Length: 245
Image (cartoon, rainbow, N blue to C red):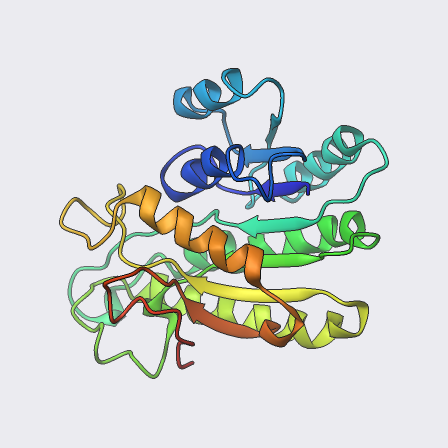
């Protein structure tokens, strides 16, 4: 199984790459780790994996970078298909005061929504011959409009809007490509102890990554177009349930 992860220089993306190299269900393929730059943490993973992880530069806000990266990945695959694409790249920032003060909406939409769309457009052709054809986007409970009041405490309206739009994008791709056997799935990875989530968060990054990969591996055509949360034993709110839109 050949897997590509965007946003893999740190946090959840880096941990996904790390765990993909040790899981029995993914060890025989190539893991393509993409990010704007190769971080020291990612380089350490690459150096310890005997060439099973390949870094390819990819800035999701730069169309030329996306096109170039797809060309490089095609060469890396050498005629094989890309089986799984995990869209983990994204940005997050906050707004002080009322929503009228929000000045970062374009920034979030560019990275979290348009960037994902542009990546899909370049990489879906590399997945056409795969028997898996799984495309997973890391979303957030903050993107659920039904739960907007519940998460109203978080002062990040642009992030919330962009994640809601990302969910809508995934649904449109799911409908458009279901006849070709693709599975498009949005996943809420939980509140993680990352740079974004902070150290008071519920779960460690390794816990979140393991749970996300469990969803990725188990996903089937019945899951196409859904928005689900991770399943972590002992957590009622992380019990693998579908998230309301």
